[in-house]
Image (tube, rainbow over all chains, first blue to last red; front, side):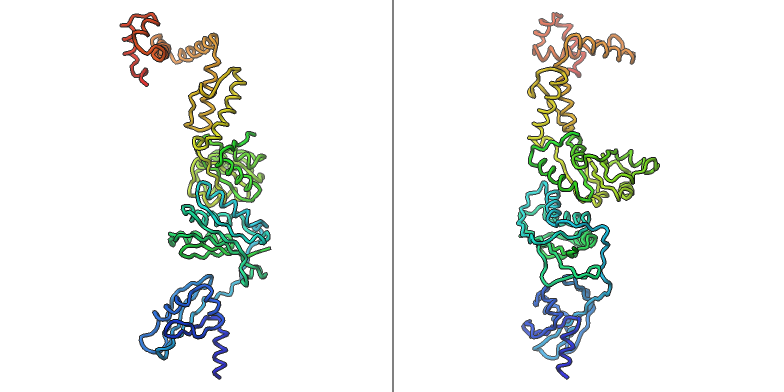
Length: 232
Length: 248
């Protein structure tokens, strides 16, 4: 019977992690393994500890969390002794399928668009860009106008900086289902040596532009990452 | 069609971006002060497109006096002067637009994926030299004179527009002969007489430039009186009379 419960947790769509008292992970399920690609163990342990009940037992908390593309609406923290604490996150799940209207998409070389946006946005800037491109990326279908506006916004963020690196690559092992077809994902990662002074309105603005160009945007203290499906 | 002068680094970059974006289905906005070559760059991007003044086009769209949808691509000048920019650009959503403006209005920023900011001529030394050469050559051919850039008071207040004007103005002055001068004066006086100028008013038109030129040439009032062969007291009176006009 014990095996059955373990199997149930293993196959759960929601991530589950069990920590020891020092914050090391003792066990986790498949979803948690995926989640750990985007968030540190330390951060999740802190989340569990800061939301644990005062006494032994279980505590539900409805909080809005977002790691990478996935949002969570609640967590469950439980502990029965001082040696172990468990954390379960509840996913916001939507069953809407992702469709993109094909009529405004045009087959284009993504590097030409990056070059165009870089040159026009940074015309009077002294920013030095270390370009690390995977040139094997083929021509893909993009809404050129909206994607350029999104790229312009990204480059503008780094206008006053000295150096950044721009990495363009195909993500391994990740796909998106677009118009019922499995598409690989192209990532464009702008990484600065310095921290970014990004406020919520900047984030919202870029998120809106990214969404219009069928891309997802992720922010870190010193980087911006755009991910868009490789529609061929 | 005139060619966009691209001798300076910034202009070369601009021309490169313009060429890259010319084949893409995106709108292009060219920003810059008067006379920097916005319209010429737009024509380099869309050589076969019709050119519209934004204000006139807005009126045309409102009054529906022309069918704009038959165009695939157009050039719009002075787009900053359009009153309802959002609605204006929505009506042109199926057309490739290359527009020019002297500044970037916030409400049209999102409609242009490519923005080209042309710096003033004073910041593009190599382009300025090339333009001076070009306009001088043109002026020499028209007025059949020998003129050098050193002979010209170059005016860059409106970039290429004022530059051309200053070169041509100086060239005209250099090309004038006595009989041209007589004819010009006659025409000048004729125009003034139509506005009922008196003898005294017209005399001012001669005396001020005469005194200015003499001041430049002879420096002191004593020399001026001697060379012009007029009484020093009369000269002083005249200088006092036009003191404000003679100051510079």
